[in-house]
Image 1: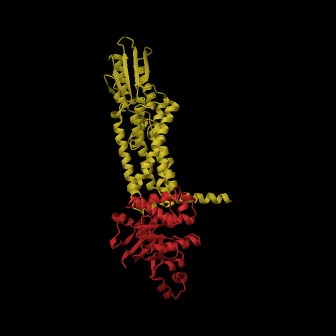
Image 2: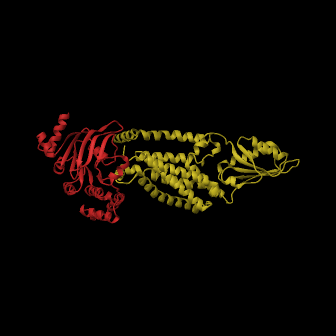
Image 3: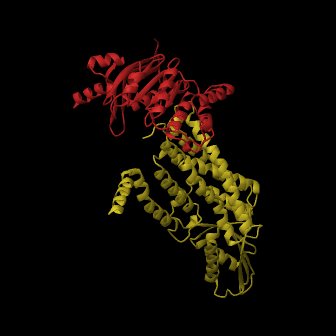
Length: 244
Length: 351
């Protein structure tokens, strides 16, 4: 499979000298769900934010489709990526439809296609009845669905999901799992989560992170057998124990 | 005590932001310094145009006294040139009309710059002193004072002209200075920058929307002053242009503040800081002539000095385009400068 993203020796050191990401390398292949998991502060979100062009790396290289990412051509990449941040991060004083409108406008989409995409997403994500509701009046689950809709409005080739199911009820979580599996057919997904069951179920390959470094990178089953663990929770527990 | 716990942590949160502390602590020092430097001395070098209608021994003596008074810088004219008043180069014309007889008699007319309300008193005092020093028998010399304007102006007009601009600044800077910081906090900013929106799109888009609101504020403010107090407007087209430039400059200054601050509290504090410095250095409180000798240069770094000055000249002295065009060019330059700085200094990433 084609390498969609290649990361080489990527580091991020914040101004207060916190090393959030420490020289990591990995690649993400076309139409796979690539999971980044690990304890809090392991660098999952920082990696996603660097890949999504929000944060500039301190050092290292990110390549998209074989071409190095730089500030000058970051907009080329922004055309093909979608990003769902941890929080809803939407305009609370705009409706769901208005949020979709503002976030869909900068892409090179025909207006008719754009309107069609918005209406399909509203329908497919069960937002039809609430499309004219102010986002601040939505429940957490609905706001998250609206947030996912925004990330998908331009039919991105690569989707970053940062803790997409955090704080959601089991039903909403299940719906997002289903959506992720559907999207996988034509979208490459980089996924971070705290829920190990989710990672095991959804991810084709996993990177287990700790203190900004990748400790394991493989298929979930291979990682489980390497640690002789029943599930990923046990793997993480063993890693934390070893580090202490 | 529960309230002490709240107080303790409130204080801790505030002082943890060292940038905010710098803004807060420097405010009283800087503002006190500005006020002190503004009213540093008795006025010096007030630009006066002198016209001697009937030169003679007595009028020469009065002219000499005026020239020796360090409050004034005298330039002689053959007739009143109201363009010099409209563009602010001359603060008053003193017209001597003294008879050449044994006992001096006649009249002195002072034609003041209507936009120089705060220095009228010094001009009148200086002329009276020059007459008194020339001859003790001054009863026969009548001194009259008028504003050189085609309008009938009131004391309030002087403040109303400044208020037109400063009301715009107050409302608009508060609005625009938090527009980026508040978006950073709600996370929408980060999201915008994952899309192909550029920094230029974001700053220009915000500026356009806030400009629209600012224009409405300017219209309501000016109309209120006109309807409630019957202030003079002067050339309506020029007033609209000055107000539009004041709105645009306020918006871009606010966006610049929002680009360089990290929290809403920092943005608001810095916006108010900029507002007070702008108000003080427009000359509304003390004229430039009373400022410390180098301070007028600092006053001219304030874009709203030019907006207030132009507004006053249009409202009160019926100034036209050539009289205030320099102010307009300077305001436009500030506006572009703030806009460029906002775009250049806008950080994509949150700290």
